Length: 432
Ligand SMILES: Cc1cc2nc3c(=O)[nH]c(=O)nc-3n(C[C@H](O)[C@H](O)[C@H](O)COP(=O)(O)OP(=O)(O)OC[C@H]3O[C@@H](n4cnc5c(N)ncnc54)[C@H](O)[C@@H]3O)c2cc1C
Image (cartoon, rainbow, N blue to C red; front, side, top):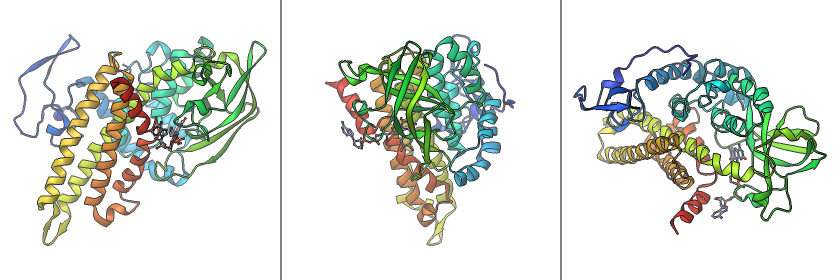
């Protein structure tokens, strides 16, 4: 894998465990090539975010993570306050992220990507969480939109769009939700009607679209066949671009959290779109969504797990120095038991998410397991956020405290990407 970020390998974390027992002598095979040491789960490291843990990673991943960590903490984190003030990140930071090689991480090098895998996408997502960087929303652009274009775009579309997307010069959103269609695709009213052989005419609107304002490229879910046996069988994914006549954007919606990211309404009035912009061919939208949504849901679970780890460590540091009744609150048994419960839950969450990442890379992550991971980890994230905020007392309620932002940001995790109630429907269908 290419590395645009300069890697400074420091793998001390790889050899450290909380027991202080040093090296573990058990060797394991890495992809049948390199011998490597048994890697501890984060719950056995001195800090859950220590580099060098987790058996799904190796020392190459550690070097990559260290580079990403340096950039996220040193360059991206200091810009978050300005993004929050503006309600969105700058276009420049997208380009900076592209220049660092942090977009299109899972895309093959032949296609202009970084030649990594979903594990690299996961590392970038986790490091953004650990550095409290909620913008840019690279998860949507890099882990969702780029795969749609790369897997289902025509050769012309790929040639025209992928290099810019990987460089951060082109920013993408994916627009499913509408005022009357969130959980239920049957409610979609946006239509794309054939206009001769070479064009579609797009009409309708979308809402709550991440990257909708800052983005210039948008993957729109629209009904292309109103006579299909169900609406789902008659939808398509159509790529449109800023500047197309009849395409307008509404205001940047004000949100409870994720204030560094833009969330938009999009309006289409007789937008003429080339037929070549339909991903995967007409009426195939439902199948494309079904095949890509597990990765979107897994990405949400990856963020949830990393946020749990960060909130735990943030709270451990806080209760270890905050004094009440003449001693630190970490010496109170109720606080200790609360932290023990959190730690056990987060350890179980990490094991499950890592198993899902591994399965996904083997092409063996069922949609129902991705749905389980999405709802279970994001429910946990919200519980952890509430408990950790409580342990911060009044300061946890102050907006400038990172735990307050984490609490607000976690709230949407159970709603978008398919609400948790819908996830349970999917899981239940696999049970009965
Ligand atoms: C910050 C943010 C960013 C977003 N980004 C995007 C984006 O980039 N692209 C995009 O397309 N969308 C995006 N969304 C939209 C998001 O995906 C939807 O809000 C979500 O799918 C829920 O749809 P809804 O809001 O219409 O709620 P509804 O579908 O109206 O649901 C309301 C409530 O009813 C429950 N419910 C609905 N049906 C059932 C059922 N059958 N059984 C049990 N309970 C049910 C839901 O779980 C929910 O609790 C975003 C939303 C937010 C808040």
